Length: 285
Image 1 (cartoon, helix red, strand yellow):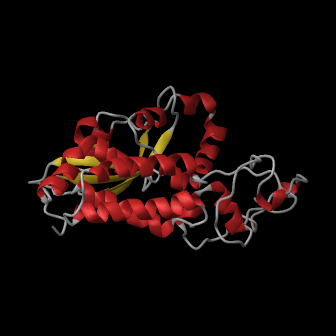
Image 2 (spheres, one colour; image 1 turned 30 degrees about the horizontal axis):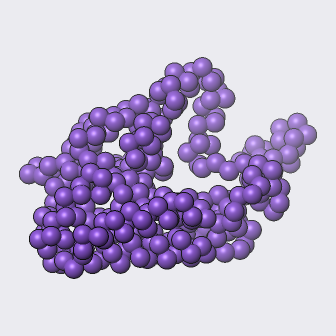
């Protein structure tokens, strides 16, 4: 683009200068948080900081900063070339345009697919992903990445819509969709995601650092048959602490997976605790 005069100084002899710099990060999950991302770009450790001042006023190198992901920028040329009216006709009243979905898990056709906002989860799973493998039954779907909640098969009529998914206790987030069949243990899957978040937490604030660690320890106990009934209340208390006291959205949203599995699949937790049995036969009880 620079060689063709599309970027750089004096673009098309217009007197307008505009440059783009690409910088590859180390892949830390916490750097998806805006202030941690800016710290990384400045060459410092990717740790979030309190947002006393909005990044639009003072962000990267203390300059006004506009942060958007690549998917957002990809929509800009289409909106400029075809107009806002054209774009606004795609999607729902509250969520315009399209969303790129990464479909994975227990699905016949894992794929990366772009769908209009308002498409149902069921349409994506069955029509685009080919449904779950023969002999399996759809149990749950996780939408939005590690900090998002899980939805049971009975809620797959929900649509790809920011507000609708949020009200259901999930997030659209990055557009990840993990399909889970009836061989999936909800205690095990909650433990898996908490393990990931424990590793990716920057460790700067105590509620996130210690809260995620403690929640994972409780899930470990339940998964090996030494959990107690009061552990379910403890998970709720720890979740409240994380949600209310963590510094950034990683910590605030970390309990979502545990809370959503407790909400929709509490009987699995109780079976692990009361009978020392994993219904899906995934845990080492």
